[in-house]
Image 1 (tube, rainbow, N blue to C red):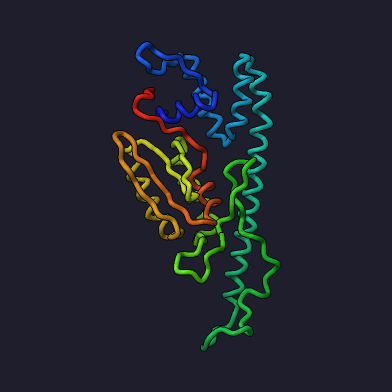
Image 2 (cartoon, one colour):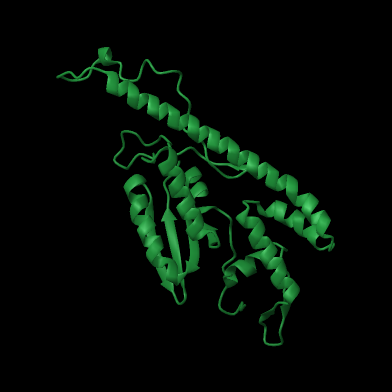
Length: 257
């Protein structure tokens, strides 16, 4: 786990640390288990406020109490996932119906006009599915409108349905344990081990194909690499969904870990 993440957890009161005479943080085996518990809870999609509540029970040392506290939280995550699956299936069915409708239309020469009625006869539209970063924090749908008619790219992702869900999953898997720092422009910087830079670069290239309104930077610093995504106004929901916006304290070299 990156030192910056441990500093952030200490700042949030999740993982207190002792200090050596030389100023380094010192962790016990119990602290290691505590960090593992936090990491496992985050992999379940639980927000820090719920993890903090769980740690209060964890400190009591009663395993059954931790279990009883955790079960409804995980059940809520399962329900949220089921809702997202249903939304995606409904969205897929609408796309399939649109394809079938287009296939049945006659081929004609000349420009389109209202008589074509390409998609007008479909059932009432269902909005694009809104994916969530976690059950308590709904995020934006893949399609966001804005800046139309301007010289800058429209704030709209060209991916839909399964393609969009896959892209979200790829970013989450790659950046899951990264340390986030929100930017004033609505973007975010995520710090990661440098050996992930190649995979990060591949995803950046793919992201530019579907979301050209983002501007990216990769900065190498010793064993770490920082991915910075600059975002225009209106793209904040996509930033929150893809990369998360949890702040992390970045300290000077003297704040050693």
